[in-house]
Length: 229
Image 1 (tube, rainbow, N blue to C red):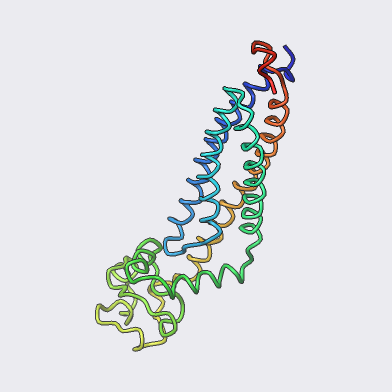
Image 2 (cartoon, rainbow, N blue to C red):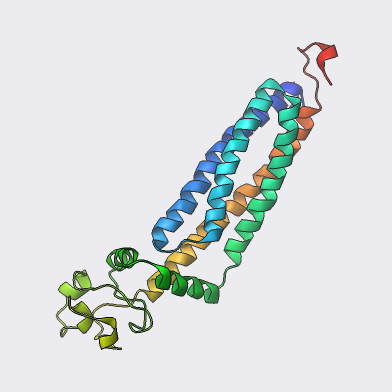
């Protein structure tokens, strides 16, 4: 039987929805990893990709059931919702890839200012850095336990003291680097990986719409001819 037949279309659509389920897991995993890497950055665009991944997972289940049962209503809603999901996911992925350096810097500044001391401590521990840039403008927790403070042979830096208060100094002695550059790189990675994966897999959803449209209008050769609408 040629690939345009009923059985081939049925198997192709079922297999494609299994792929969609796997893709949804990848999207959720990549976006979640991006948020973990950036630690303190709660990005709405990355969250949008996670939401689309969860939604794609649900749509994949509906599409698989519709393909196996050749259910006309399920297949119709599957096509409509999958196409809308494509538009949403494509837009979010493009937005992630379009973020420039200035916008990434803005996100990093806002994230540091809004984060709790616990989150800031996690950032400093992860990247072995102290503060964001200006310790007056961007206060930070003590850096005394960081490796850069404890393993250095340079003169003692005020920021390495447990008693350090952000308003006591505007300078560092160079023992610990600031976290600004590390955060910008993490945010860049988060946007790039999430946007790239989302954009690549969004095009496969158009293929699903086309196959579902064709399969929905095919007659099951083993079914009662009078049962086909």
